[in-house]
Image 1 (cartoon, helix red, strand yellow):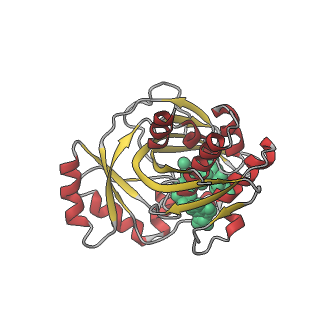
Image 2 (image 1 turned 90 degrees about the horizontal axis):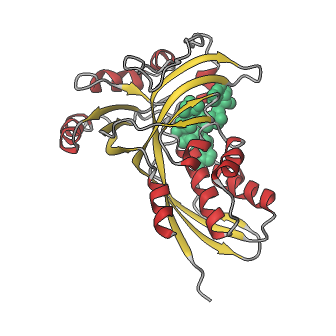
Image 3 (image 1 turned 60 degrees about the vertical axis):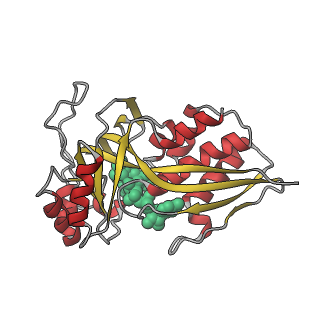
Length: 283
Ligand SMILES: C[C@](O)(CO)[C@H](O)COP(=O)(O)OP(=O)(O)OC[C@H]1O[C@@H](n2ccc(N)nc2=O)[C@H](O)[C@@H]1O
Ligand SMILES: Nc1ncnc2c1ncn2[C@@H]1O[C@H](COP(=O)(O)OP(=O)(O)OP(=O)(O)O)[C@@H](O)[C@H]1O
């Protein structure tokens, strides 16, 4: 019998702004942030097994099999759904780890949506997003698949329709620990909540930037270089730095100048994630 293989994309995200409003008792921070996806990411391939085993075949340097968010997501979904099926998984990883572009969270969401489809569970997005939140604050937006204004720890999502420019994303060769940045005493934690929608212009700052730039000269350097051509911003807790351009040609031009000294890529911003576009085409 031939086993059906399903390949699904796992896109990156950008935080177009990020304000920190306060810290909760459990240490997590109340945020306001705007998420948009990139048409750029990893690719996961799944094949159902009928013996219940969950196996990720691709090795990740520094991440043991059972700590991988892909495996954690699959195990939680299997437990909570009571499915007797298992899965073989392979990944083509191109997203940097610790880059602030949500690679691990996106991989977890692609796994949840892929297995929901292959195991024929029929879970809706609310239920998958709630499970996803227990794996990471950024997982729900990838499960829902629409650009969003996020509040709470990132889980209260309102769909939005920002412009969809081309982005040049610079990838400084450092991995930033999100937990380390959120525990820095110098982090601004008292931004005033934005009450009007859509978010008014002039609110595009990222409150993590001063702390990340202070700790990581590589990030400072990327911000300075890109800042010569466009407004240069930090996504999440970094390390990636990005800027928007009206066309691919303009983004490519700046990329050609900068990527001699720094790694980076050009990708289109998108309000509907490429994962959801692919899943829609399967129905
Ligand atoms: C900074 C963002 O990337 C913005 O999109 C996310 O909020 C981080 O999302 P994530 O990587 O999925 O985060 P998690 O894996 O849930 O948390 C990593 C660590 O970051 C800190 N953390 C994360 C999210 C949040 N709202 N407040 C926090 O304080 C916590 O110390 C936590 O231990
Ligand atoms: N499938 C996975 N892909 C990437 N990282 C993973 C994965 N599973 C576990 N991890 C762990 O999670 C850490 C954070 O990885 P990730 O790529 O999500 O960072 P990030 O882009 O900074 O995330 P965020 O923007 O959500 O803070 C990694 O350093 C790694 O130890």
